[in-house]
Image (cartoon, rainbow, N blue to C red; front, side, top):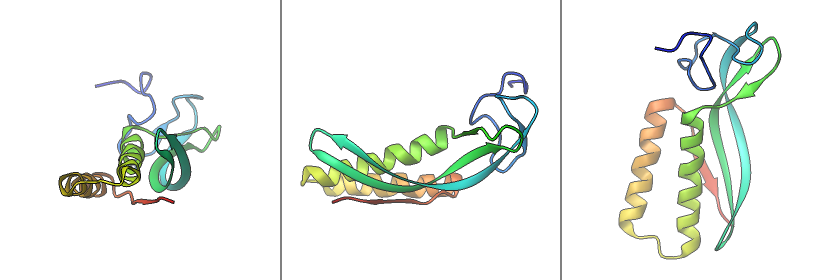
Amino acid sequence: MASSDDAGPGDAEPGDASVCWICRQGRCTESRTNITFRQVTDKGYIFCDVLVPVETCGGCGARHWGDTAEAIIDAAVRREYAKLSGHESAANAMHAAADDRDLMRDCGGAVTSVSE
């Protein structure tokens, strides 16, 4: 188990106040933040809107997200990219839906996305 001196972003348990890994003085608290972004792909742009867990330091204001937020973002990008290809199979659709359910269960984050 890592000590608080070794802690990095995403190491704290969700909802726990932890010591900031940047300033090492402030307390970090987790909240959910909506992130809207676009990503260029070989098939064009995709547009995503996701709700991810983000930790913010009350002392220095540093903000960071961990592996759970990355997984939510990656799932949204994969799902929207599959829609652009125009031939999303039923198996891929079921796999994406299962991934979304697992993410929702594990972190309580909302995964939504919009493609144009």
